[in-house]
Amino acid sequence: MLVQARRVRRQRRVRRRLFGTPERPRLAVFRSSKHIYAQVINDVNGTTLVSASTLDPEIRAQQAYGGNKAAAALVGRVVAERAKRASIDKICFDRRCYKYHGRVQALADAAREAGLQF
Image (cartoon, rainbow, N blue to C red; front, side, top):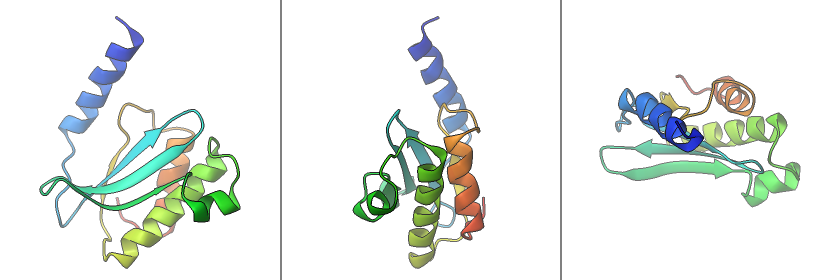
């Protein structure tokens, strides 16, 4: 089986169990080789409530390179702070097809430390 097809199957398997509601939206993570993106999504309305990435100017000023754990932790803190400002305390974590390891884990741990409940 092709690597891309396996990734899509894994992503669908993880997403099947997750659904963001207005009370408990979904924190979706996308990881590329140079950047990491996180957004809080309400799947009922299909809207993005809060987002952060290593391309944001405030994160880029603190962290030049976005493809490491330090940058992922910074994105996790920023998305958690923005979610708190939007009065979001509880979320469900959507890791997509990625293992809960490395940059994905660093983002999740930083968001938890900043006050989000998974």
